Length: 160
Image 1 (cartoon, rainbow, N blue to C red):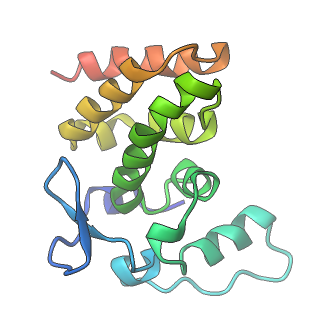
Image 2 (cartoon, rainbow, N blue to C red):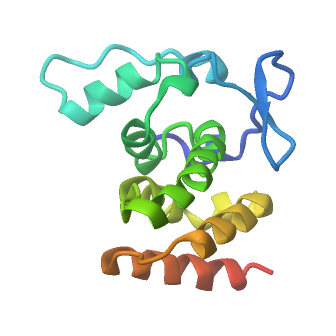
């Protein structure tokens, strides 16, 4: 788990290979979280959990190579949220259409994004708008995720 204060740190916008998101941020997806944050974690001990070991390794990969499962693991642990949430929102937006065609959608990534602490959403209102657009584009949402959606919508409407 990262220090909650780190979640408010801005993502570097001065990278030449960055992808521009609706928030006018550029995220250099060729860089790893370790490079972007400038923090090298110590190697986990041999008896560390699989999640700790995986998180350690995933922080070393270029962010653009992370798949939905890897993004959900990191975001769900509040690791690299300022850098990874825009990438996750982009992936969720791009795959929302696929969900209506095949009834498959990565609920784990959606849940990881939806359930971030309210200060993450409060400090990034553009992300709230993006998430609402993604939710609106989804059909046949599974029952277990509806509660997360309702909570997100309620909290985001009270932030105005």
